[in-house]
Length: 56
Ligand SMILES: [Zn+2]
Image (tube, rainbow, N blue to C red; front, side, top):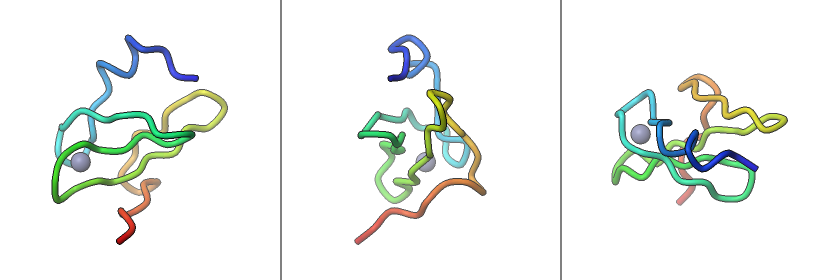
């Protein structure tokens, strides 16, 4: 899983909000953004192009 210190310095590249871990995804905590970033082999992929839009 992702190192806690790493998680604390990561931010959503779209809106600069902190992210939280949920399973194998990192989810932007900003209301109205909520992009979901994949984690591949323990490495967070903090790219807007790779992110999933939030579901309903
Ligand atoms: Zn965001």
